[in-house]
Image 1 (cartoon, rainbow, N blue to C red):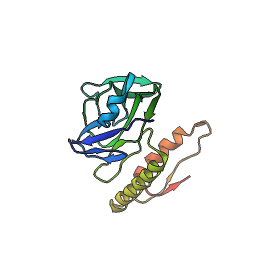
Image 2 (tube, one colour; image 1 turned 120 degrees about the vertical axis):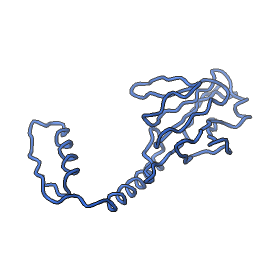
Image 3 (tube, helix red, strand yellow; image 1 turned 135 degrees about the vertical axis):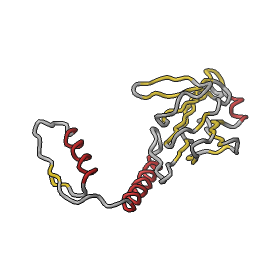
Image 4 (tube, rainbow, N blue to C red; image 1 turned 90 degrees about the vertical axis):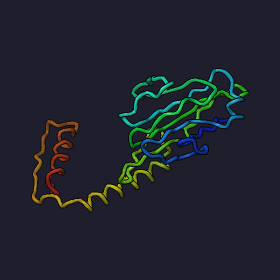
Length: 188
C-alpha cells in the first residue's frame, strides 16, 4: 500500500492533497505515526521534486539529481525537517517507503502551492493532470484579468519578416514576444 504523504503548515493539523500556503509559511512533511512505525528497510525517502528557483537546500536535507531534475531529499523512517516557503510557486513532494510486507511504493498525492499576489499558481512537475488543467485555467484567467486592468498598449503594426533559415522557429518566437511587448497588433 502506498504511504500516506501529508504536510502541516505552521504547526497546524496534517493535510493531504493540494495544500495552499503563503510565502513565509513553514511546511512540515509528515505521515501518520502508526504508518511511519511500520516502515522497514530500506528507509523512506522524502523528496521535494519541484520548487521555486530561489529555494535553497533546507537544513537537514540533501540535494541529488536524476537527469535534468534536481531535488532535495531526506532519508529516514521519521518525518524530515521542515522547510520554509520563500517564493510563490509549486513545492511538489513525494515519499517512497517500504511497507512491512517488503513492497516499496511511492506517492505524490500531496503538494504545496503558493499563488502570487495576483492568484497565479504555476504548474508543478508531477502535478496530477486533473489538477494542473484547473491550475492552467485559473492562471490564464488571472493573467487575462491583469492584462485587462493594465494601461492600454501603444497602437501600431509591427511586421515580422519570414526568415527561411530559422528552422526551429526560435528567432520568430523571440521577435513575436518583443513585438507583443511594444504593440497590440502583429502582422505576420
